[in-house]
Figure: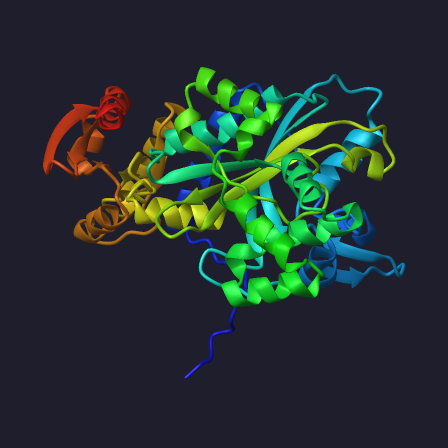
Length: 426
């Protein structure tokens, strides 16, 4: 027995039904992004590893990136994220661009990590950013885009929540607890790890970074305070703006949201599936990244969402579309060898009329051709037999209704378009 060669660990095969779901998700992302006036862009799949060093965090650079030396000896990586590429491209043409920029992208990324449910080493990701504005309202717009996206998918606030925090508020609270400024990045990392560790391991980690028992107790109080956000002018303005945009019910304050990447400087947010507690997307405000790659300092806010977790969530709630990929196509059958040319000519005419057409590629019995159409979800079939060819007619079979009619060849395109358009309107 032959052994089938296996694919690369953590990489995915996209069969047509999987590709249909991915393309559907891409269309929704495009629709929502463009409804807020954002323009599509993309960066290279390969970048120098030093673009991410000291900008995205040591874990991403040293443990999660696919790094190799090119023939010139330079360290290159498959892109693990997009924001540093965005900053580099903005810095390159900063004097030519019109701000604020509103840019979005959807493409492939790679991270060397342990594959698990909802996570692989190769994935597709939506990135969307506003660059050049430093206001709570710009932060609120990105959160609102998240909410509108969930609304378009049919997800409700009782199922999905976007948790919002401000690192400046957290740092202010740490200062009140007597945590020195140079130690605060470690404490932010501690907060970010709270739900990833057991309570005992988390407290042990806190003591390892030299938090005193009193500071640890105070930190727990800060993280449990649901009304702490009211001390932040930025968060007050953000929640007010979300109210005006009609999506306030999708967002709430959560002091534990910190975001692990080092470049976030202010407001941060993550969206969670409330049934299971898994993060779907995350983002926040960053001020220093464009300057870090050689440009002038620019404020920015954005988020990223991978395709795998949101697909699992949609599947769980029954919100993925049906995967009938050829429902809007027509099968032109081949009656016999003498009708082969007529069938291909008919297929060309129907394509010219704007229809998707599958022409059966060999002469086999008609029932086999119709069975194929039924199995792949094709709605209508066209048959040209000897009698129909002489009379310039065709038989149109409605495979769903199990009916058929004989029509003139000049009418067939209109009849098929009408049949398929009726399906789309139902």
